[in-house]
Image 1 (cartoon, rainbow, N blue to C red):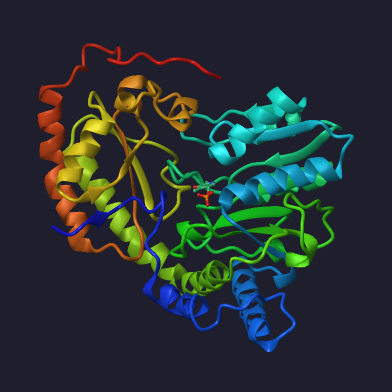
Image 2 (image 1 turned 180 degrees about the vertical axis):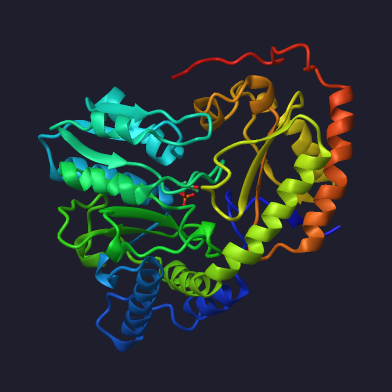
Length: 398
Ligand SMILES: *Cc1c(COP(=O)(O)O)cnc(C)c1O
């Protein structure tokens, strides 16, 4: 049985064309782009091309793209830069459903470094209240950091409106677009976004490379200090192979963006409606209409998500769960909790995230096999429809 990989929001396969593009830079062309000789200089030219390719996907100027090591580094750099550039401003605004790359950093800044953080709530569909954002902005707000699309539910936030509010109030707006880049079209020239994070391994480039878009003329302070690489904005000898791969992945993503929003979306919809109609007590998590085309997050009531994952793993199906009952953490996903999903449903949540490499046969196979699995698990479930209390009780850490 071949692997059916439906966990693309966790990481993606390196596209064969991307691998091919990067390989020579491990072997024949291993030069350092900072060297004076042509051997290194050639690699520099290839990095320039990669920067232009990233800029083409984002709709920005190549000079506005800084290469980093990952999405997490881009997120940390954005927030630290805004704070360092405006030392008199001590307030940060973010949302309850951000990735830990933002949320854990903000909690750290609050606990250890004396910053004040406002965390915006979401409603039951995972949407923000923009009035709440408007009211939260203060004279000392240094940055608003709100993700473009949620990794767990796929819910897309209205970044244009958020950016307009921030621009009106003179506050820097950063968006974690790690899940959005390559999946939905974007044109940063026309959007009020000051900084944007992306990550290679979420769009068919390898792990260990990312980028941060920083709008021209925005005050910026580097996070990693050392050599003059990236025009002094991110020191350290370039991850040449990773950067070249990210450039190629962005180029390929641009060519496939329509496919993502038609064929991949149709596969996702087929999977979702097939499962929802065949399985009782199944609920969709997140705003159905404002979602990434590749993601569906479904709660199967009264079963444990990890049990589902173990069963489908036997069939070679990879997905992920918002529940981690058996792995030590008693809490279901912070995203589903923020949306007020009841525990008996939050624990049974499964995220399927597709890519252009998925096929209709794979979707059919999952729709054929999952209903039986859920039925069997429900027979032995510690939860039941009458008993609303979960086997593992939630613990509040926030
Ligand atoms: C994966 C992810 C990140 C982290 O990116 P890494 O490259 O793995 O560090 C940040 N934000 C979101 C929304 C993600 O999905």
